[in-house]
Image 1 (cartoon, one colour):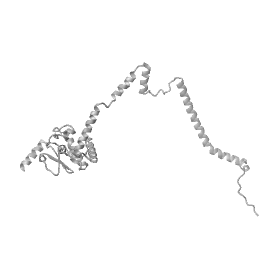
Image 2: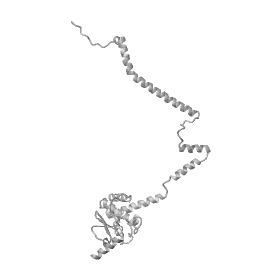
Image 3: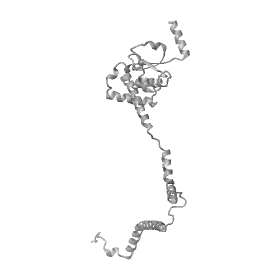
Image 4: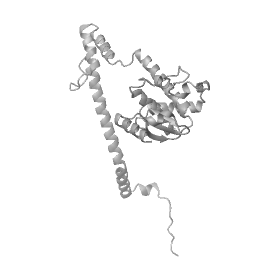
Length: 260
């Protein structure tokens, strides 16, 4: 009867045989060599770093220049060196002079900010009371009329004076809401915020609404007497917009009126 070979766990004696021991040692060295080399390289780099810092520290303790010669000192270091050398306040005065030349905010800016805020509110009032039910394009068109008047020599040169021109009279106000009692009703918050945004948008020159140099407008529900003396430039929403004619255009309008 043939003997059956058993698969037993190798004993230490088998593993310690010369041929098996050499083979195991070779395998172990092959696996461990990269790790050993890596540790050696890291240890060498650490030693070099330590040596560099030791030299730097020794130079510092000996009072030698620790900074590289090729690196020029900064302006701050130069000022400090001058101050230490001459013992005066020249460096501090120089710094104050530089800071003063960079100053961009003065007391006059408070007045400028207040005037700009007032202008935004005046523009927003014109938009709200004249075109609050209009789409954005209609609101921006009304705002552009105000801006066109500011540029025109026939009108005041600022937004608030343009909007409220003639408002002290019962008749003759340029924008109806300023003299018909409309302002007695306070704006609704949502509509007012929308009007303010449209005002800022127009005043920053971000509007692309094309009404030309229009300085007048009226709703489509009416036909004022002055509309026949001006040139129509656009219809936007429920408003019709007009501008002043040139001399040649005025002559043509006059001639056309005689024919009819």
